[in-house]
Image (cartoon, rainbow, N blue to C red; front, side, top):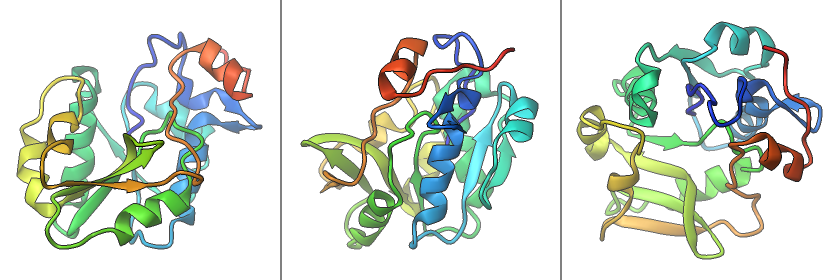
Length: 191
């Protein structure tokens, strides 16, 4: 799970913003913890890592610190994949600012592995989103990613499978305080 960004558009550590009584990041961690098909969960932190560690229950996730988080989402993805590459046949990527992703969507994506797809993406209303699964064959390509696009370039093409996750939550993300208010959350932490 990627949650290393500074939240510049948000104005404060958005991982700690409250949504339904919990920090934003904790919702994504709960989804990962409830997924029955995951062996291991890591959460990649960077900006504000100490505050996030102190303020968010991790529900069994191991923290990975991304020292170069300011390079963009690709740095976070590289750190997360590197942390599990020696023991993983695939990784599932979720984002820490998507509080409505459900564990059932994660399981559906994992259950869709078919031996021929390099990546599998959840879709909502036909729109590709998260969670996304990357097979081991993509780990070297992840290691060379740069910038703030994450795995976007790897998540397209003929060997990428879309799996409908309609009715299993949503992957809409929260990037601004206004989006937080619209989501039903509403308070931001003092920083």
